[in-house]
Length: 415
Image (cartoon, rainbow, N blue to C red; front, side, top):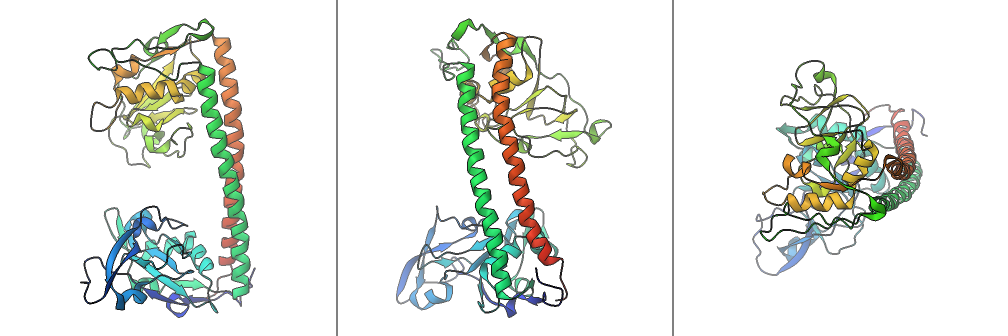
């Protein structure tokens, strides 16, 4: 990596040309005009440009070159929600001609001084994002930066050859990350299919009664291998009463919310105390072995098997398995196709899809003996173990990639 005497920070406007985009409604077509595609904030994602939904605008021919994007331009959002602040990527020229809206900055690097990929890498780093957060104009949940603030952004500028080496190293790690992510996605699909096969339900067929009420059904389920059909409320307890997350010991305990659970996998993405989340409304107590299900938008399949003492959002139902059902089997059941279809069926009666307590209690499931449940749990766990191993590999790659940037910035000298 560069030594201390070589790494110097420069203002961005000394390394690149910075321009705002075309203001919608701000230009009246006159004379010879043309309709062209343009990129807006929704198209500029963190690390890539999405062109799945590109809109068009009429613009005078004389202004096309002013707002036209070139391959290698770095596009950055001026703000909006906090997560959109300074979000950006390098444009690859897949659409030409293509313009950019005024809420998207265009940075055209002077190639003899600064590589576009290196700039994008730095802006996405903690230090780069930290700069945007420090200088942004902020209101409630919104933030924005100006062209002058972007122009004054200090950019580390090692020799171009060193920039290229860093970009190539990070790109190589990114390619490995994509391979691992593809393996994780494939494994998750295999796990989903295995759960459906192992539970031996007939894809969750639920026939509605003559009045169209999905609860008035015969719960058509294959009774493979003679498994009895049991009502959920008979094998697991639903929560009774709520606790105040502002008082101890609850304020210091982990608060699980729907946003903390990855859809369709059961993976808990975030663990934070009630105090850290500023919780104030009533919550349910949870303990190891409980299976927590998000009752809002059940199609997302947000189900988690708890391994800690804590509390959960009132938008979730914690189920406590009884003696006839294993926690892991209940978890697989609620994550499976049969329950998912049932939940989607009974949740569509209101504006926001929601499973109420009565619906959840009335769900029927095939329940094998404990020994057979254990077999199901072990097979599903084997998929989960492989997934956790890949997650660790992905985390290592992410840490290594960040380490490359950190090592570069550790030799910072001046602005």
